[in-house]
Length: 140
Image 1 (cartoon, one colour):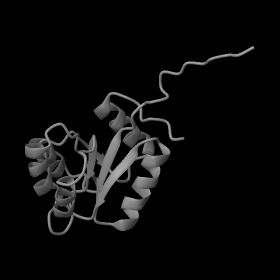
Image 2 (tube, one colour; image 1 turned 90 degrees about the vertical axis):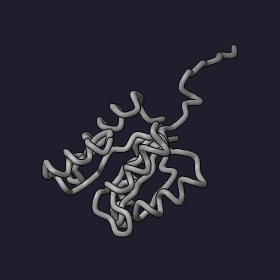
Image 3 (cartoon, helix red, strand yellow; image 1 turned 180 degrees about the vertical axis):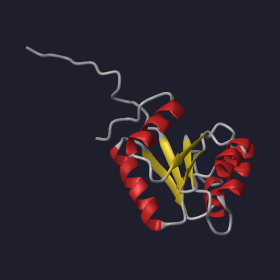
Image 4 (cartoon, one colour; image 1 turned 30 degrees about the horizontal axis):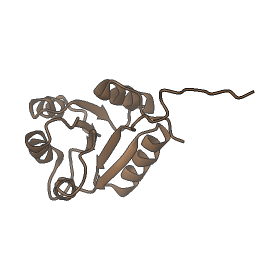
């Protein structure tokens, strides 16, 4: 006897993410954790200028996790460019700066969220789910 199973999620497109962070270890750890959660990290950059240069030649990620304090081009400068040229990309800040002035400025510039780097992974998972409205594809 032959059984056929149907699964609606077999071709689920993974949520794509870019990580813009000047600290290599932080980028690598974030990449690893996001991959374990089923997200597909498609771009990484150590500053905003490098990220914008990469975006001109790459498919647009669904989400860009953006650090604030970086050399060459910081997160505040970067988000201005992102929101003009790629308005559909969701851009939450991922930062150690938890002062209200940083949060306020990030929201004024169009950030889609703000997650502290010392937050538990469940908080980042919840933020990403809120931004996309869907679960990440399950990693195979």
